[in-house]
Image (cartoon, rainbow, N blue to C red):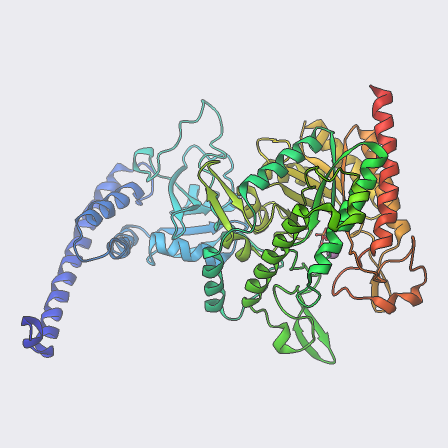
Amino acid sequence: MNDMSSRGLPRLRAEIDAIDDEILRLIEQRLAVSDAVAALKDSEGDGRLKFRPRRQAEVIARLAKKVARAPATLVGAVWRELMGHGLQAQARTEIVLCGPIDRAVLEAHVRSHFGYAFPLSWASTDAEALRRARDEEAIAIVAGPLPQLDRRLAICDLVRAPDGTAVAHAVGRVADEDCAVSRPEPAAGAPVSGALAPAWSPSSWRLRKAEQMPVYPDAGALSRVERRLDAAPPLVSVADIMMLRASLARVAAGQAFILQGGDCAESFAEFGADKVRDTYSLLLRMGAMLRAGSGADVVHLARIAGQFAKPRSSGSETIDGITLPTYRGDAVNGAPFASASRTPDPRRLLDAHRQAQVTIDLLHAYAAASYADLPDIHRAVGLAAQARPVSMYTSHEALLLNYEQALTRFDEASESWWAMAGHMIWIGDRTRAPDGAHVEFARGVANPVGLKCGPSLSSDDLLRLIERLDPDNRPGRLVLIGRFGAGKVGAHLPELMRATRREGRNAIWSVDPMHGNTRSVGALKTRLLGDIIAEIQAFFDIAGAEGVHAGGVHLEMTGAEVTECLGGSAPHLEADLPSNYLTHCDPRLNRAQALDVAGAVAKLLAKAARAGRDAA
Ligand code: PEP
Ligand code: CO
């Protein structure tokens, strides 16, 4: 029996009570001294806050070095509270938050950084928060980029997430020597703007407003899935992503063309080796047609091995008085209208990941296989048997950021973060808010990034997005994918292309002639080949007129003989749509229609090549 337990529980409790009394006595004593400090600060009368973030950080750092048994986090938490209460006794000091980010998350970070003694409030704009920091006993917490600061204000501290990432600036009337962060010396007269912009990390998207993400009822299950994906091997290699970037740099230089295509949404039920092989061979055959017509180098990008989640126009669906979450793709929930299948289940992310892995293995196998096994591809591509296989890169919309983050890896050699769930990711038209979570995630990974550009995108917002996603203007980094619809492309695209050209941007322009051309026939959605080809043609015409390289086409298609779009080879009649309508999501071109579209694109590419030669 050891010494402690021999004394018995009552005696130990009495001992703890005595220690607590002593702690309390010391706390009272500490607060009394802190009142005396306040009186001295008052006499300074310099209009500054009583808040001294640097002193607080030093107190905690000094004590944290001394601990033996207590974890440093305990020291931080206790002394932050003590000092927070001391400060409030000196002067009620409010924290004013603002920013286009998730309120609960930012409040949690602010609480863990400043403690609970501060009253919190929200301002509707950065300007209002900063005005209050200037005129009141208040600290502004600004999560977005900082505007120019009034000279009385300083960035006095950084709010950090538990992983140490800076997520917001604390701004207040604090003397430079009292700030917990040292301010980079601004050039005379230059705005402080942009200084200390909160750093990117794979998780920094979590502070931003995330559109179109499922609400998982079981947060514990989600984090277990995230941990498993964290530990999983990456799906693609950094070397291959770099090769894709190099190929896309050639597109940016006007020397190559992107052929991107595949299912609107991959499905668990329809998965099979034949399906992957059909998509692969169809893309290669189409690529061969484009090359044959124009001599253009083709970059093959499949919408595959990760295209499992869909943005939806509504979060819920009501049938016969029953409301359930909408179907958001097999990585999120099931299509059948029943509570069990529609409830988002994070374990589906593991299924999606497994299917993506098998898909990529199959793509490698087809690429490496002797072309003798794939005679029609061999003929179509026109390659000698010993020629290198055509690489097929993978791409998907980076919609489910928990999944993307868990598969993001740091590569020492390139000193960069890479999204390893696919070679290229894109940001959808519904999730491209410049301050939103999806843009935040994509801006920090080094992969090529696509950005869907629809009719609601202004040229100012486009330039802001480009600045955020590609600040260094690197050729091959950014692909702008216009998706306006045949009827609208003429009203929107010229101004956007003019803006990127005027600003000397290297971003590639591509066209998605699918998503702006969806129409309903009864309960089914369809797209007309006439609309699709008209939008592609308008895209080439506008690019030609604006002096921009028409850099690619982005299609929803399948190698199967579905009846989802109308026109071209077949089907032609609305009445034929139900006969093999398989998509859970958007209507896809069938194999024959995809080849029809490739034929049309080949002609346009050949014409553009002739125009280029004539101009030279
Ligand atoms: C898509 O490509 O499947 C899609 C949803 O596109 P967009 O974001 O352009 O609507
Ligand atoms: Co779609």
